[in-house]
Amino acid sequence: MNDFEGLRAVVTGGASGIGLAAARLLTTRGARVAVLDVAPDVPEPLLGYRCDVSSTPEVERAVTEAATTLGGIDVLVNNAGIGAQGDVTTNNDAEWHRVLDVNVVGMARVTRAALPHLRESSSAAVVNTCSIAAWQGLPNRVLYSASKGAVMAMTLAMATDHLDDGIRVNCVCPGTADTPWVGRLLDSAADPAAERAALAARQPMGRLVTADEVAGAIAYLASPGSSSTTGTALAVDGGMYGLRPRPR
Ligand code: NAD
Image (cartoon, rainbow, N blue to C red; front, side):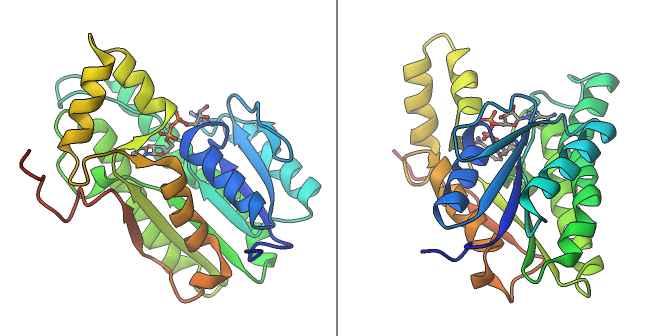
């Protein structure tokens, strides 16, 4: 399928996990893709730009450089994000500011910088990586959930504001996806293999979501094939939100 032929995409956090899978898939389907990441070591033909989404100067410089090289921006995938664990007593103010600055303000910063380019495109789409945490009360994830709830609300507000600009804005809500992020969490357990098996068993489908499955949903929402879809959230969660955990 070459539905991204001639389109130019920017993917934040595209050097690992879901972002890398999305960047690769868009490339396979014909897009030229620039990855903005704090560690932009990406395989060819992806173009890597060093960018911390919590820094306005870095975002403005990287988006301008990427747009100049690509000749414009049609698709923005706001995917960079960091985690936080704990209940409301756990995280101090600095941790709250840091996670919200990356996960929420980071998406606003990159979108703001990309907006003039997206306005010039005839197939402009923004896809934000949200989380099932925006919909479901996950245990011990207050700060992370707050950040993803804000991503969900911001997606709807941006979709409204940029309707007349011809820019569609949607988000994907992954469940527990098998990425280096989750791998690092599992590796910190006393018995990573047992922890992985227990985590999989808690999912309705009995397995984790793959990064490629989330990338498929991102590509759908970014593609001309979803031209009537804006202001919506697509769960890619193995049934985690809608179904009861299966008794095992
Ligand atoms: P990952 O750690 O594998 O990849 C995240 C990427 O973002 C890395 O390349 C990292 O360098 C980059 N990054 C981190 N901070 C950045 C910053 N300040 N500026 C620029 N780049 C930065 O993680 P992943 O699991 O692929 O997660 C990607 C997105 O998916 C995140 O927004 C996360 O919240 C979301 N998500 C993940 C899961 C999951 O289970 N893995 C579930 C729901 C949502």
